Length: 226
Image 1 (cartoon, rainbow, N blue to C red):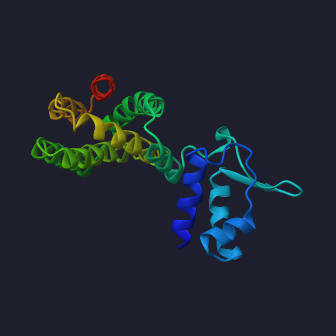
Image 2 (image 1 turned 90 degrees about the vertical axis):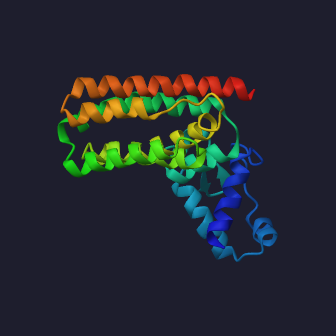
């Protein structure tokens, strides 16, 4: 019930049913949702912690402007991508990938353990096996990029995995389902080979090429869809 209440309130904010500055009528909400005031307040605390709402004396509980939201929060990102088909959001996530992942590949080339390499190769094998299965392809691709971030052994970069994963998942839903989708294995294998060779520059360039191609594939899929 708690999770459902949070999701319901968040969806109203994301859909702009409650725009920036909207003051929430808590008694009316409690009655509409048929929950206790305590339960409602607990749900609102969750959204407040994510920067989506705030409460002030004499003003009440109100919706915060989007720039106040914790955009790196996993729930906020998930809600945003689910709320609307927003090409601009995917473009921004792709820009984040272009900044973060080539650098991550460079670092991984100097730090990846044998276990890391085994994980990356296993993801490659899953990717090859799933070439005709869009859903399995998405999962294999996500596993590869998660293992890449883990191979940096940098706690901050590893936390960026959730940003990469959400952007990648939304992109993959479009691209892997398109009739023009190409085999992703060769470009990913170049990254693994460079990391395994301990070549930071080659790993960075291979990942940059991969992300650039991913951006181009997304643009093609969006044009086809429209």
